[in-house]
Amino acid sequence: MIVINGASRGIGKFLLESYLSRNEEIIGTYNSTNPTKHLELYEKLDVTNQSSVENFVKRNKANFRNITLVNCAGITYNSFAHKAAIEKWVQVIDVNLIGVFRLIHALLPIMREEGYGRIINFSSVVAQRGTPGASAYAASKSALWGLGRSIATENASKGITINALNLGYFDIGMIEEVPEEYRANIIETIPVKRFGHPDEIFNSVEYLRNNPYVNGTSININAALYD
Image 1 (cartoon, one colour):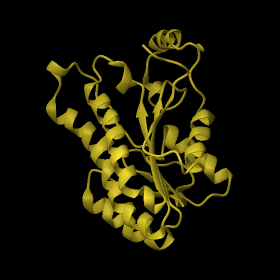
Image 2 (cartoon, one colour; image 1 turned 135 degrees about the vertical axis):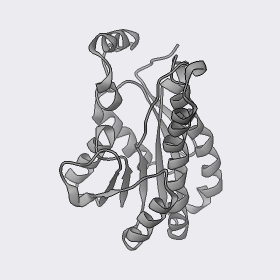
Image 3 (cartoon, rainbow, N blue to C red; image 1 turned 45 degrees about the horizontal axis):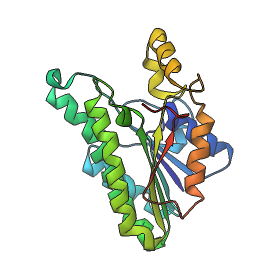
């Protein structure tokens, strides 16, 4: 069973449709963006609400087998730190970090009992490059590295892996909200002079699903985009 957290748009939607084409058993979650097709595969889930997470797991526990959890859900808030609205800054942490942990925490007992689990979190090159105005997003994404290393050591003996994919700039997801002139500037910083393709993300998720000896790490998918 593949559980895609945040599957109604962007990367999550692409992954859900890719796995559907391979006849995989899938559940996709959504919250603020309603899905427009394959509605039978979706459930509403607010990862900032503990009861919502617990009820989601209870409803589907009988169907959970060989779980792969892919955490795609995320929000951003852009502001220089000294001007930031604290409540908006905290909201990013609540969705991108605490919400991810809530879902992992709820599914780990099932994974441990079964002796199998794959957890794949999406981090970002934004957390690596010191991007102005992105302190909330960067903090939430970089925290996933430490979270993953700790959970990996706790659960490796139970057949569970947890890793992060540090995404560069792809022609899907949040980049669609960036004005065209800024996109051109971003492409100039990428050595291959293009955005990544969604199938390159899918291939990386599949690599982590199928390699049990990769655990507690993060992998850069950014076409050599370094400072």
